[in-house]
Image (cartoon, rainbow, N blue to C red; front, side):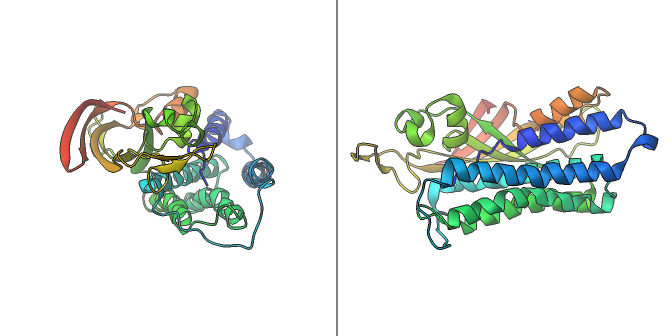
Length: 300
């Protein structure tokens, strides 16, 4: 099932907004137990409400079946799996930030990154009991990878040295199949895998004036009208053969900017920079695809 890759933004915004408020409060007046209970209520309660709503909106009207798995690992040249990892990673980061705000001991904060898998894995259970889909082992592996990336780094270094980022450029393929790839910009951003690129970024420089500058490795794909091939059926049961459109992978090396390393004492600005840092901003890049290397003055 397609998971809105940017759902983490709302959670991260709530967590960091709370964190900013917390930093303005005198440590002597903070009741961390109350904060932890609030985080548990918001985290688990919000997850329960979200899944209940998802069931009503998506699964309720579809036929159910015995729990089963469905192998979708060959679909969309695995771009959807990167989306799962990305969402799980940032839900994990949001969990860690919540742990900081709630006064959880530093050596235990990494455990709160499990929010990524706790939120996403039950969706595979819904899929597993749905006759039209099935639980995906690839999705579960991707969810786990995102959680490990956030939890593992915090456990080892108490920071995220490697960060996942997302960028999107509209493709021309959504016009061919808008019911699957989206009929407006927001739907395109979530559903058109041709326009999505996922990045793993690292900023190795230590100099105070340049430590925000780093490198990003990106992965994308293009030419995809359907999941496994470009032969598809429209709502009128007419079969379309777009096999002449070549499906291919794209690999990128680009400059990156770590906005969280910009020093500021303004809490709201710090929150804004954190949220913006989830997006890979335009920069010069090299692309390797179709056995060719080409450059982009600005790649997004």
